[in-house]
Amino acid sequence: MKIAAVILAAGYGTRMQSELPKVMHPLVGRPMIEWAVRAAETVSNQPPVVVVGHGKELVQQHLGARASYAEQRELLGTGHAVLQAASLLRDNAGAVLVTYADMPLLTEATLSRFVELYRREQGDNLALAMLTVTRTDPQGFGRIVRDEDGKIVAIVEEADCTPEQRKIRELNPGIYCFDATWLWENLPNVPLSAKGEYYLTDLVAMAAAQGRRIVATEAPFEEVYGINNRIHLADATAVLRRRILERHMLAGVTIIDPATTYIEDTVVVGRDTTIWPGTMLHGETTIGRHCQIGPYSRIHSSHIGDGCRVLYSVLEEARLDRAAEIGPFGRLRKGAHLGEGVHMGNFGEVKDSYLGPGTKMGHFSYIGNAYVEGGVNIGAGTVTCNYDGVKKSKTVIGKNAFIGSDTMLVAPVSIGEGATTGAGAVVTHDVPPGAMVYGVPARPVTRAVADEE
Ligand code: UD1
Ligand code: CA
Image 1: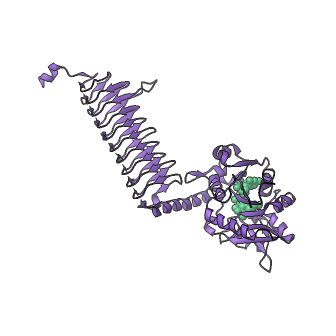
Image 2 (image 1 turned 60 degrees about the vertical axis):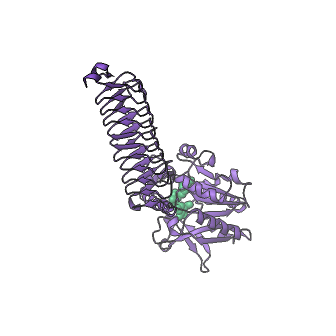
Image 3 (image 1 turned 180 degrees about the vertical axis):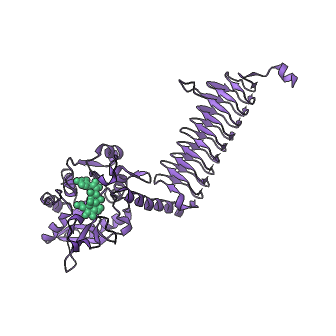
């Protein structure tokens, strides 16, 4: 039997008080909607139908072809939202799984178990399967009403509850699997609520009144956490953050202080790497094995090879080859690439540049738009003057060159292999291989000067 997934994501998310649609708020590196899509992908082998409305452009832009879309032009409630998917799914699947996009903590395991339950119970007059949850904090969830025999007879929204019903602690997480034929037949008949919305939850009372079977099973309470405001967002982030850290720890990463470590879901970390406190790893970052990362470092969408060390540093779209090291207090900006074994010490900044294997840059230098070959020594305070106020120009430094302290390399300029610049040189012309230049502006050391020494 084919199962189609429908994810409701059209709502305003008013309680978020945000310009960003609720379902696009990020949680540990992925927008809320993506957590719902990933869960749905594990139980259905066709792309989920995402019902979009408010902020639909952003949602579609993010998910692209991973989903198909049904637009809800007027936001008339969750029942009306599912109805928008009818034309896409009517003859397309035997069962329809419906979830809400604001439940990012639901695990694949729980959803799979739930769909298994549906598969076991299907036919035999079954209208739907649903999850329930029992917990003391109702979070505004609909209440599950059962009859004397314990059969589910209705879901009542909090706003519509009698004082007695309000006390019910068995709640509706909003995860359902419907028999498709029954769903499409009955959904158009959902009545308009007092609030002026068509509640999907009213289908439960309709099924019960028709004598159709409803099966339910408990969800782990920590997984069915709805996000309606930013307090919920922070709570859910904390749970996801911990799950990610545990995944890495079980896979062989030492995390000295999980409380101060933030690793986004998109990040890959190799075995036997140690993450020190106060470290944040973002985006498409990959970190190799046997690295020492942190303390107090922020790495965004960068690739770190095996055996590297990053100490009190900030990296963005950078790359470190094997055994390279940076810090304390280094900064790598977009396009910085430190080759194997490069040592970059305190207060350095590198942007859009390659530093070849074994190059050393110990103290407060700026290297931008440069190509530096291997074995170069970059003296303290060296600056590539790469910007003349209009355009950026390139600096090239040959193998084993020695750049004296406080050298200004006025680009475009190239320093030949094995060349030397004196301390304080302002280099405005290319330096041939093996030559030595000094002074302001820098000129070659002549025989006479060399003789004096
Ligand atoms: C809903 C349930 C409630 C359940 C709770 C669990 C209904 C009527 N109520 O309430 O029983 O306990 O979720 O979290 O279903 N949406 C649309 N179009 C709409 C309205 C909503 O796509 O017209 C989407 C929203 O984007 C959201 C989801 O449906 O992703 C749920 O909407 P929300 O307003 O958060 O419902 P709750 O009040 O939380
Ligand atoms: Ca909600």
